Image (tube, rainbow, N blue to C red; front, side, top):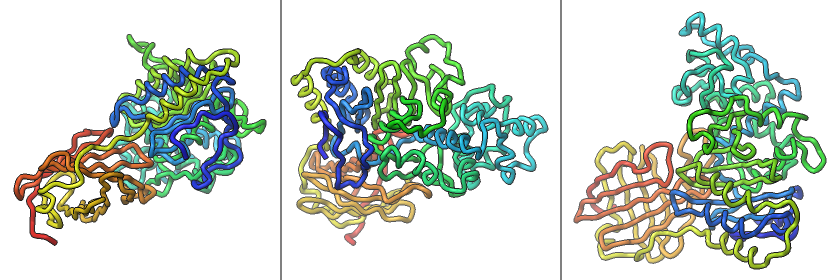
Length: 509
């Protein structure tokens, strides 16, 4: 597919991807839907930022039910799955809506009755046990479980997430105290799977995903075999846009009601009131929280870490879906408010060929740049085929071997007893795969890998995930037989500057 589309007719699927059905959203010129293409071009330019820490990956804008702008930063694509992170939560909440409509559970069901085998037999005071007995599905949906702080870090390292969640003390009466709580969503997912008797993706496929024309999607699994719920779903940006359009239409898709009547209105209202601290009026995380989605300064949204968004703007009749790799999550939202909202008019606009050309150019400019340098250096012969043995380090890397070639190099790295092997292209990055980082993750993960010599003693390798946010940049400096490796991530839940590795060259293998 091309890196950008400004459609004037039906959106055309990438047949080679095998990911689209006949129910994709139709395309239109921006002007026909009352959108100034110059405003869209300004939006794309503002979202483009500076890679890799403020990087738009893909974008779909829908107005009046028509795609008016669609594009991606090559090699990313709008019809390829991308990790949604916490945007997964909105899909979990939607599954709850279906389960409620089908009388499998209710919002006021108490959790201990839905998961009796996970109720703790000890470790809670009488007051804490009483609070747990009043915890409902609705409390989980609004993240008002009663925990004083997010319990996720205490839940996810265990083998039984639901049991561990219920075994932690509730400091507050359920329904009274909001704290962002990804573990609560994991419990919701497990409850729906238990009452439905199938996995959440299997449950959603005929009810939601297939009617909307979703392509292949994956969801990470917990140690108990349930989907992780609060994260771990991967879906294409085009599909997220269709989901947003369904929310915008109150759960109706092409005249057919998919979601229960009134569910979207209930789920998108601010069950958790907006914040009141100074500056809250410009913060999109203090506008209130619904059922696993946020209220925004304009409309409401599902969102995920590093800039995965499904924005629903009823006042403008607009949906914006995007995948990103950004550190400051407010920046993309500010760009949408600044550039897209003023571009939306009440009536069709006169054709603007120059404006559409500017939009196409803005999308075409979204290309990944790789470090520049030479494919080889004199010191490469000194390193070729020799194993580097590293000092003990927090990353668990014990050794690495590189074999250098004219068009690509081949690296093998031992990490915690496993071998990671990749080809590293010079002029063009080389495709490859890496094993899942954690048990329960789908895999293998597709990547592009690249390497050049940026100085006579400096080698820079870049590994870019194609369906996730991570870009790993590894800078290798060689001094005689001593090797220093500095790894860095573009975005991360923890530090982006990883521990420096120090090693010594051994004999050739």
